[in-house]
Picture (cartoon, rainbow, N blue to C red):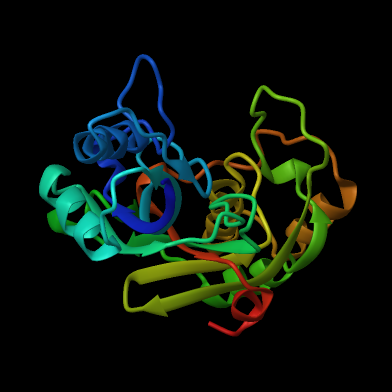
Amino acid sequence: MKRKYKVVIAYDGTSYSGWQYQENALGVQQVVEEALEFLERAPVRIFGSSRTDAGVHAKGFVGHFHLTKPIPPANVLKALNSRLPESVRILKASYAPESFDARLSAKGKEYRYHLYQGAIMPPHMVPYWTYCHRPLDRKAMQKAASYFVGKHDFVAFAANPNRVLETTVRNIYSFEVKQSGGKFVFVVRGDGFLYKQVRSMVGFLISVGKGNEKPIAVKELLDAASPRTARVETAPSRGLFLWKVFYSEKSLTKRT
């Protein structure tokens, strides 16, 4: 008898081409499926809550899969972690109802982007923080971030995924820019995100923080709903984390 499982996964995306399986590169999905195949003694497909770009990290990625072997979730967690590389870890494992789908059941996601501003970038932060040597105006960036909140057409802040989209409209519930010394953390929650949307929004906020753009420029670009131009830069992937996937609107809209 098949049982459906839900797992929460954390991974260091530095050495991976993203979550999804790819023929010519190593994705996190492939690594997890190889560990699952060892448990099941047969191929197992894991379905993820979303795609992530090469170099992007995850703290709370969610996946689901089926096993025919009667293995308790606690044992699945231990067995998988014993087979996975240190860069990938199963944080939680549980049974899931057949109606659960890691992607389709999700109500939204939280992403966090880490940026370090200072004269020298500490080496241990390099894989997980983007570096900026120029001073940044947090208040200006927060003002600009506030214009992203709400339902908008984000076509100006997304890259072309080379596939047809039904809509480029998304709903952003909150967007905070937090600072502690030289560490800036951009925290954004939304019902969904377009290809490279988070990195594009952060890239533009950094331009605002440097004084190259005014905060109101975010509203102007959203209102124009014109295709993206070189004016909107994409922040590097290494600072981005998929922090959490929400399966209830109540938890999604709760203040961070």
